[in-house]
Image 1 (cartoon, rainbow, N blue to C red):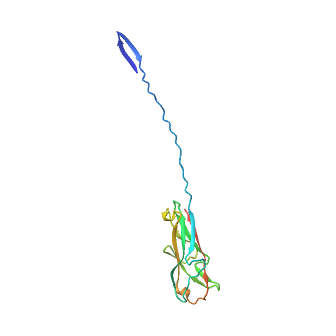
Image 2: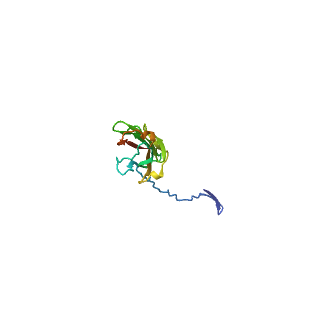
Image 3: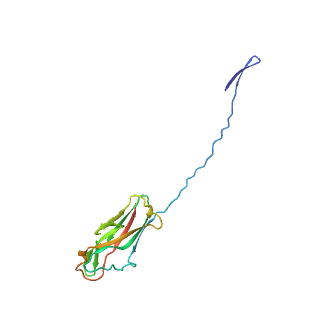
Amino acid sequence: MLVNYLHHGLKVFGIAIAAIAIFPSVAQADNVYADLPTLNSITFTPSRGTTGTAIPLTANTALSPTSVGNVNVQSNTYGGFKVEVESTNFGLLKHSSGAGMAYTLNYNNSEKGQITTKTVVEDNSALITDCADSSGCDRDVKISISQSEVQSKPAGFYSDTLTFTLTNK
């Protein structure tokens, strides 16, 4: 800043400088990370007590929807998950003689029909919070058989194998 003043008749010129101390701010940054592992588990538990225990049928009588087991799903992916089921005998309970009884599948109280091909039984496009913890979510699995499928069949043991697959999205 230029200073101009008179001192005893003399004109004095000078420069006044104001010093302002400027101290830079000092900061340090770091990122904080957390990594939650993906849950990806599906378990089938038979409701008959043990695997291979048969549902009792009555000759010439339909089987109303009857629980055969429970599927437990554990999935915590943001994009959701898909559950598919596949039947070894294409939706038939097979007898050793080759005779078969078509049955329909009910998954989580939703009728899915006869499982003749790999079938999507649940398809979620977002996180299902009930399934995203260590206890997962339970889905009841039932079958039903019409009276026409039961009549005139040989006595004995009929079986099929259902395979449930979980795919995280």
